[in-house]
Image 1 (cartoon, rainbow, N blue to C red):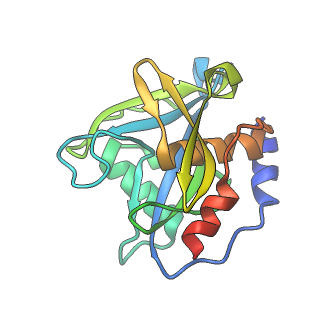
Image 2 (image 1 turned 60 degrees about the vertical axis):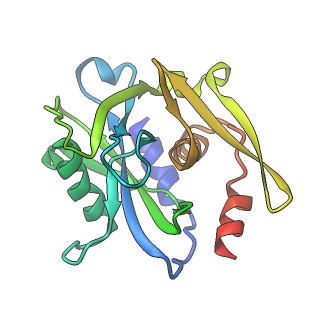
Length: 200
């Protein structure tokens, strides 16, 4: 599975960057002990203390800062700050194409393997840390397709609900993109339309 993910991510043709501000997020796959049989993806729930995305499900990550070597480093730095992720136990598998958030931030998702047990501790920006089995996300019975209208166009955006946690919006789009590319999940999502909308 791991080699297959790396190969598929390496084959991606990434879009040229925009002029928007940049951010990096970390799509972490738990892959140790019992998780080797059923890997899980790491998510966070934002606290009500943050000014944007409060209460929403997200991937750990944040805006690029001076001193960051690259956006992958941004995603790891923010993951350490937000949830105390031990980045020494992370292996990079690759990256997905960026998406533009509704706040006009160019968000670059990086996929990585978490290969040992972590002592994850949320900071004040994070209300909760949780993970969802890949098998649950890949099961089409668990995918909720939401039809939205944007610029007189109807688009499909997926979402999931797991143990009371709703995965939706940009985080769900990134999740679906990862599953479609790496597992040929065929989850309905109009990412091309959405990217074109934001590129304009």
